[in-house]
Image 1 (cartoon, one colour):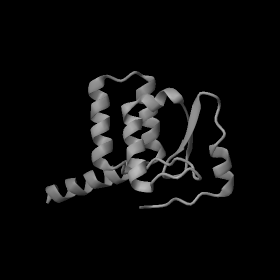
Image 2 (tube, one colour; image 1 turned 30 degrees about the vertical axis):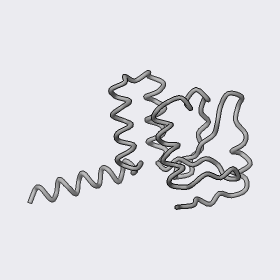
Image 3 (spheres, one colour; image 1 turned 60 degrees about the horizontal axis):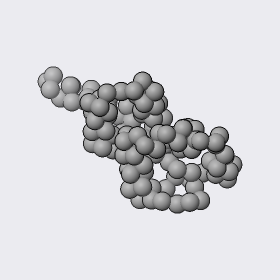
Length: 119
């Protein structure tokens, strides 16, 4: 189980969110203040499950999702645009199978595979 170390100031900020919102951090330590409504979203539920598996549960550290900020931003955009059920399922499959690898890692992986097949 990995641990992310947080400075004391971030622990204090984690508790501060507007009414009706909650705070999460990405693995690259970017802070997100999200509406409580997002707790009902299947993609965020999967991310929370992965966070529990990756980091465990602790009440004295900020909730950290095991993915970079870019993925969280995509998920937020999808939610705001009311994505179709099919697209939501595709994103869920990506999150679950990639274990939240960064976009850069995925791109590098695809590039390496392409190079292998080119020879």
